[in-house]
Image (cartoon, rainbow, N blue to C red; front, side, top):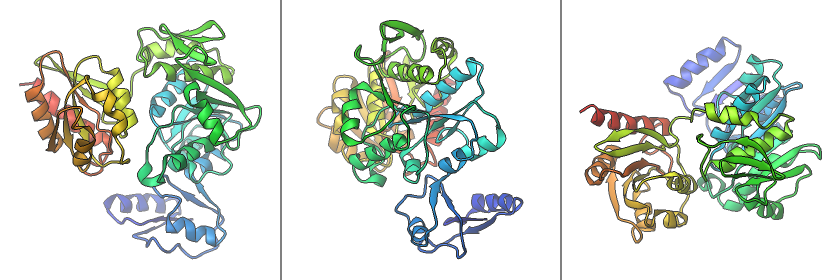
Length: 417
């Protein structure tokens, strides 16, 4: 067994030492236009390696099957059943909620995939699970062939990762691959608002269940409760999900529980006990009457639009970083009237200023700390300073977590003064 990485740094060498104890040879600093010689049975790729990679192309030319780590781990699941969630925004929150619902119902369930540990590790360390709850990204679906969840959820699809996939249509087609191998007895759960679009772009054999806030959806949210066929099946009033943005996700969770043969009312208990994931509309604290909210996980215009809908105060917005898309005009209506000013950081600052400056005041600040200083100086009591970048962090930070942590450190340092 051989592991290949084009990088050759301290982290890679430490990982190579760990792999060596397992009998795996690690080849670091490997050129992108060649693959190791040998008669390989299979190549397992991680999400960061695109389907267009020369490595993958060379392997396929040699007749070597290439699959994602997600499919490799899933193929060794035994009798464990699978709920898989894909979408542009909110996947991790839904995966966490579903895993907690299944556990509250007395079942053995573990989250994995794009959220949490790799699927292979979960299968190795947790034998005999009832359910795998997988977050599945478009990057992973590029190299899936046989992957088949008994319950699939496409939470939403908005333009995202166009720097890798090129067009929205190509990105959407990858998301729809979640259902490509499903059988008539399986279930695909889709938002009512996009069900027609998805059907026009693809075909699947599984049974379709729609969700949303519309009464016409098979499972819908209304008045702090989840409804199906005129019957209330769960309550979410007063929970993290009791809003227009996250309520439909709770409806999707209820639909998945029904499809899995679990009483959906368990969602009531799980939603009340739910603790949001970090860096997602996290209220860090107030300084001089101004609330500071960390939504560093926001890396697309759609996630920024969702954050603005959740904001319950006038907003001073910090946005920017490395753009995954080129057109940010869809956010303009959300900015207008709700956002007092935008403080721009990173590589995309000029791009965002060009897209938004005619609807809201935009200040190019460069670094996050400079943006925070400017926003804090302008903000008035009763307002919110919101970090919701709509871009990745990789121009200035190693991850969205690092960016969010920097935001929170700044806030806490001011709160202590």
